[in-house]
Every structure is written in C-alpha cells, then in structure tokens.
Amino acid sequence: MTLHDLFATIEARKTADPDSSWTAKLLAKGPEKCAEKFGEEAVEAIIEAIKDDKAALTSEAADVIYHLLVMLAARDVHLDDVLAVLAARQGQSGITEKAARSEG
Image 1 (tube, rainbow, N blue to C red):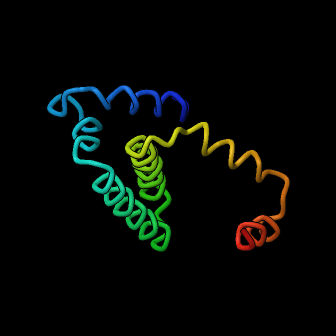
Image 2 (image 1 turned 180 degrees about the vertical axis):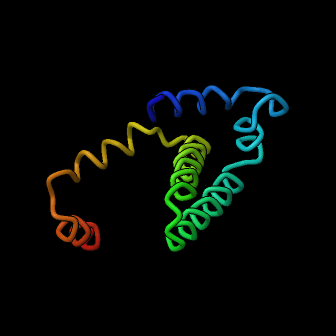
C-alpha cells in the first residue's frame, strides 16, 4: 500500500457510515478532533523514540502517518499538494529554505 492508496481510502471514508469505519467515525467528529488525535499519536511516537524502542516507534510512526493523512483530509488538503511542497524544497538547503519562509 502506498501513501496515495491510504489517502484515497481515507477520502472515500468521508462519506461512509461512521458506525462502519474508524476513519469515518474520526472524520465525523470534525477537523479539530482529527488534529487532536494526530497530536496524541505524535507524542506517542516521540516517547518511543526517546525510549529507543524501534518496534514500538515503527508502529507509532505508522499511526502518525495515518492520522496526519486523516487530518489533511478533514481540512480538504490533498496529499499531492503536500508532496508538491516537498518536491519544491528538494535540492535546497534546509537552512536556506527555512530562511526564505521566514522572510515571507
């Protein structure tokens, strides 16, 4: 499964019955709840990274990616738009790119 496949599934769940799908249930709770859940998962990933538990970090990283995509879908931000931003940054120094954003 690619990120595009996962995002397409999440998008399809926007119209699904919340009783039939965790994703649909989460989306039905609104963008704020989706963002809150993403934050919770990010913190859990940070904890596992600090503990140096690779298996747990791997699992939590999958949760973070999934919940990020749900949060994006909840706000109608498409994965391709995020990937386009990353592509535009490719080949630039991170320091230069960040400085350019700060000036704008």
